[in-house]
Structure formats: C-alpha cells, structure tokens
Length: 533
Ligand SMILES: Nc1ncnc2c1ncn2[C@@H]1O[C@H](COP(=O)(O)OP(=O)(O)OP(=O)(O)O)[C@@H](O)[C@H]1O
Image 1 (tube, rainbow, N blue to C red):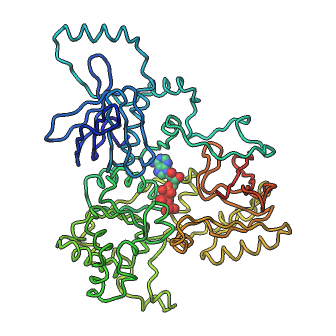
Image 2 (image 1 turned 120 degrees about the vertical axis):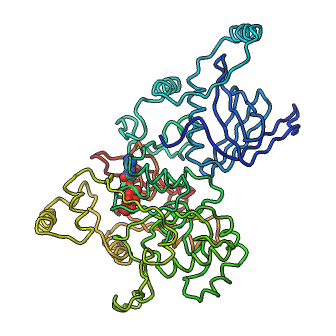
C-alpha cells in the first residue's frame, strides 16, 4: 500500500456546537495530521495534531461521515457524542479514502461492549492512577476486512474480481425500471479498486511525492495513466494542477487542457504578447497558485510551446527557477503521438518542420527535468509473444515473423454474438464516417437522444472534450460501446461492447427514455438501462 492508511495530512477545522446547534468553539489548522489512535481501553479516537499545538482527540463513537467531495480531498466527520464536527480539506484524495476506509472498517469490525462492563473498566483504570496511553491503530488486516464484510453481509469476492452470479444479473425481460441506488458508505469503501503499484511504478511514485521534476514513459499498457491517477490522488488538491495536451486525455484525468491552463493561445504569439496574455487575472492567479503541474500526453506538446510556457511561468511567478519553481510531473510516450505543429498541419514536408518539434528537444526540458523513468512491465496484455511483438512494432521493427503472425490473424472470427470486431482508424473522421454508414445500413427506425447539459455556456467545450456525443442516434441492431464504468461487477465497464436490442415503450412521449443493450463479456449477456435524466 502506498499510503499509511491510519494517517492523513490535511487542513482541519473543528467546530463544537451547543444543544441548539450554535457554534461555541472553533479550531482551524491549515496544516494538520489526523491519526487513528486507541487508548488502553481499546477505544478509538481521531487525533488532530499540528507541529505547534496540543493534539485534540475526538472519540470515534456515534459518528456520521460525509464523503461526497472526497475526490476533491474534502470530507467531514460529525462526532455526535462530542457535539462537534471535524471538517477535512486539502487532503490527498487517495490518502483520505484509505483513512476513512480504515475508520469505517475498524469501527464496523469492533465488538459491541456492554456499557456496564465498559463503565467498570473506566473506573478501574481511573483508580489505578496510571496515565492513559494512546497508540496508533494497526493497519487493516485481512481479518478486519472479513469480519466487517461478514457483519455487513457483503460477499467475500471483491468487486475487483467481477464474477457475477447468474441469478444476481438482471434479465433482459426484466422491465422494472429503476435508477441506480446511491452507493452506501460501506459498499463504496469496500468496493474500491485496490490494484497496487509494481516496483518500477512505485519508484516513479515515490520520486513524484518527494517533489522531484519527473518524466515517465513506457509502451502502451505499462500503466502510465493508471500511475498518473494514483499520483494525482496522492497529492494535496491545493496547488496541484493536472492537465493534458488533448481534451480527451484531460477529461480522463479530470483536468483541463494545457492550453486552457497556460492561457497563451497556441503559443504562436511573441513572448512579450504571451506574457500579456498570461497576465490576465484568472490565468495569472492559476499560474501563481500552481505548485505541481502534471502534464499527460506530453509527447504531443510542441517544443517551442514548452519553452514559451516555461518562460511565462517564471515571468508570472516572479521566480527565476525553471518553470518558476513549479514541480513538473510529465507523462507520455514519444513513440506514440507527435505534436501537431503548424508545418505538419499545412502538409509541409517533415524536413522543413521546426527544429524543436518534440518538447524533450527544448532547452527548458534539459533545465527542468531531473528524473526520467521508463516503465517496462506491460499490464494490459498477458500474452508475452504479443507484448514482444507490440514492443517491436512500437519502434518500427516489423520482421518477417511479425508479418506472418499478423497476416495469420486475418482468418480469425471477427464477429461474436452479433458484436463486430473493432476496426481501428488513424483519424476520428474516418471512424465517424464508417460508424455513420453502418448505422444508415440498418433498416430499423432511428431514435435520437439529445444530451441535457446543465451548463449551457459550456456545451461547445463539452462537445469537443467529452467522448459522449451531444446528439446520439441509435437503431435496434446498432453496435455500441460504454464510455464509463456503470457496474463493474456486471461487466458494464468503460469499453464494453454490445448491440442495441430494444427501446423502452414510453419513448418518445414518456418521461424516461431507456434502451437496452446486450453486452458480450465472457460469453455472458446482461442489460443496461439508460436514462435521459
Ligand atoms: N500495477 C498494476 N496492477 C494492476 N493493473 C495495472 C497496474 N498498472 C496498470 N494496470 C492496468 O493495466 C492497464 C493499462 O494501463 P494504462 O491504461 O494506465 O496504460 P498506459 O501506459 O497509459 O497505456 P497507453 O499508452 O495505451 O495509454 C489498465 O487496465 C490498468 O488498470
């Protein structure tokens, strides 16, 4: 495990209230450490400590946890007996998740003690005159986990091993329409994805946490995106800016594009003009607040643009260190997608392209990037021969053996249960026109679904950056793919393929619009209900 699951560093506010709910005392710490501790009587507490103040211990009994904004590093814990609430903010989200998970598991697994027995114990302890000792709670053990699952009636199989039982799957004939129930605190915690970093990934991870300027690369499937998410969730949200060179990549890491953050347009303007552009209040404030800049798909960032934003960072932050002292965490594979430079857009020959095409060729790269790592272990594929072949293809080595093997795959079955094999295209427009023509060939009536965007002002941006289209045309028999994880244990995951097999009867006049989709996952079918709300 990468975090200590019984400690978290964050900002902490504690507010005590009277019987009427009026605030009577408040403690505010911008930098605090929360630790789970036990006393001699095995009662559990959250200890809130800082470097300068005396620790405050809050007893973990009769609590309510609000964790809706946990992904932003925020949560609150109401201590009903102590009549106070602990507000947590700026916590590394991954760390906060593990901390709250530990609280939950330790509390749920605790055997209820008869109050009379407890009273006796407390009395005996007080009379003994021995000062109360506190010790840090031990990490979650398998026994803790099993005991909690048993108490909650959760099956032993973890959600990370999707093996749905037949009778628990929804039948296609089942027409009872229900919106997914909100996740309960318990199941949400117990079902979290818990894949751990391997040794090479952990080295990069530790280097990032130590504040080094890091670049990490690796072939497809070595876990670059996986790592990036782990890194983002391990850093305090305040001052951490996650961006990517493309909208889609930015969307996947929950960030914005580098261009939107940097605020200098396409970087073609003179340096003086770039300084002016970046001096606009919102942009300059973002640059000044940034302590760690994470850039995904760095291979697509143009070398000259990289030099420009480095100069802008120094100028705006009035700091002569590379990137104005911002920690850089860069990730990408230069053997995948190159930058889209103007000369290439205009179909000019490569030889006339600008000299600093890749950002690793820029001066700023040499001055700022201290540690470079290459991830070598491929996690996406298990077939070693296939991985070897992909690694050779990556560097343009297509030998006779590879050619023979690839050609041999042409006789493989490319349709399974009505679901066609994916056809890869180098350009989105090509993929769109193939999809369009396949949809037109289907004889069934088409149904059109329009996105209901709550923020009308962002529709254009959403349409360009979100993989789901604003207007979706479907027909019975259409090939479809899920774009987000809906129900992992039922195989309804991002990328799951299927075909539309029906629409809900109330369409188009009814309130709910539903389509059913059968998906192919280990030769099993299941349905998905899709609502327009
Ligand atoms: N340490 C790990 N343990 C288990 N699974 C892992 C680990 N690292 C990565 N994976 C899984 O391997 C798969 C590929 O990872 P990921 O998509 O992050 O690779 P990538 O290097 O970003 O690939 P690409 O260059 O194609 O974008 C994912 O399903 C990810 O969850």
